[in-house]
Length: 249
Image: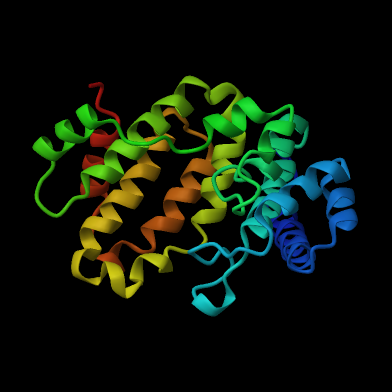
């Protein structure tokens, strides 16, 4: 991790993140590649695959009117990897490409295969739920929880943990960017089950971070802890939810 003093890191990091976010919104591929010290081809491939599609949550502030695109999110995560893991070029490239299969435009679903990182990109893409797992979680989960969500992410998290040495830097920075806001959970569609949805979403985060004790993990958790009162949940309940994702079935 970068060894500068916290004060200089905070200022330089925040300023740089804001700058590169604006460049991503403007799709300034060449300038983004220069700042990230990546080949333009990786940045262009990322933009080609996801275009201008917006993420469901905001990575900058709580207002739903200021959501960023999938492309901007990947640019931001790559910037974070460069900051926190400056010598890990591979993870920086993976950050720039990690969502290009999962969030691909209708005619770009297979384009990710052209990258030499295709195996890892595929590994970072959620897999369909298996019936036997769905039956298991349906049987053990209290009423109110969504068994499909637990099935979908249980194997995803297990695969991440098995490959943490090569995926951990990317995943930490991906979670860090996502943790800047949990306002998407306040969408009216979750209103009738807000506590359950929050426990699912944050339990997934705590489960993902179970193999990591870094400072970044603590920053992520602290960002989400600020939302506990809003969602009417506690850390004890989040940890209980996380343990369900970690079940070996």
